[in-house]
Amino acid sequence: MDEADKRATSVTLMMENAWLTTVLVQSHWSLPLAFDNDTQKRTTEEEWVTVEHYVTLRSGSKVVEIETMVNNTVKDHRLRVCLPTGLNPKKVWCGGAFDVLSRNTSLPHVEEWEQPTVPTQHFSQFVAMQDRLGGLAVIVPGSNEYEVAKTDGKDGLDLRITMLRATGWLSRDGFASRRNRAGPCYPAPGAQCQGQSWMRWGILPYEGMWAQAGVHEVAEKFAANATLLPAHGKPQLNGFFDDPLSKGIRGRSAAPVRFVGDGPRPILSACKPAEDGEGTVVRIHNPTKYEWNGRIETDLPLFECHECDMMENAGKAVDITDQGWEVSIGAKKIVTFRFK
Image 1: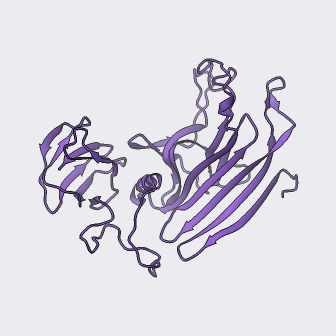
Image 2: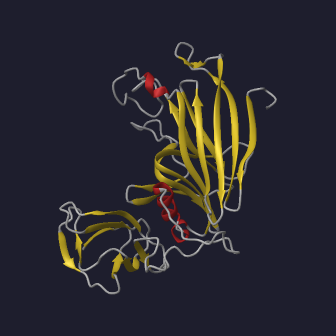
């Protein structure tokens, strides 16, 4: 319990074995009950909000995995997790639709603009800050909101990730960032997000730049949550498992479609049956600024393969050798192949 009796925190060891360790970090916060429209201040009446973080360190993984449960009992607030980085970069990198975007960590606020810039920004899958030695990425499957800010008395910038945003209206007047309403001013009591909410996320420290460290790949795998790794009974002495791309005793690997080549790899966006039922379609996008040259290999039946458009209309044929084909995927490009 802190000195003001406003917050109580406890740490409990939940599980510990050769594969993983999980601890429960439980916090109880005494927060204002709501926002008072008449006084334009938060109410003096308070209620306790419980936040539980299940933090897991897994052998062979660089990601600190976290599951967060929030029992929200108050209204009109934004609840965020604040991660100090110790870094002072000018750019922040974040996932977008088929891309990784760079934004300035310091954004101008010009009151004369029709919509002045707000400190919170959107991201998809991950957001990261880095310097020339390495960085810190926060992985959150799906779409979310972040802010880069400096905490008084601390060195470096913080990454602040929104866990919960409670509001009671579809739109309101009086925002500094918007001269007009975003929509009708209707009550939306369900948007107060009362009760329990759940969030799965992770923290990834890495060396070098995000592309070379494969942060975009890690974020995609974390979001899919479907990685199978063949392994010994326990991790090897170096802390790693067997290579999941190596072929097993039946001649197959753990990855039915895999990229073979050097440099930052592209992302497999889709592997699905063709819409007309004739063959398999794979869609790949390269969110990095580097062209990737290598091979796509598969253990699936492979007799012929064509490049195709986004509507899956077959184009020119590609040469197949050893259950794969050579590809060149330019920076920020999307390519689609159809094979059977």
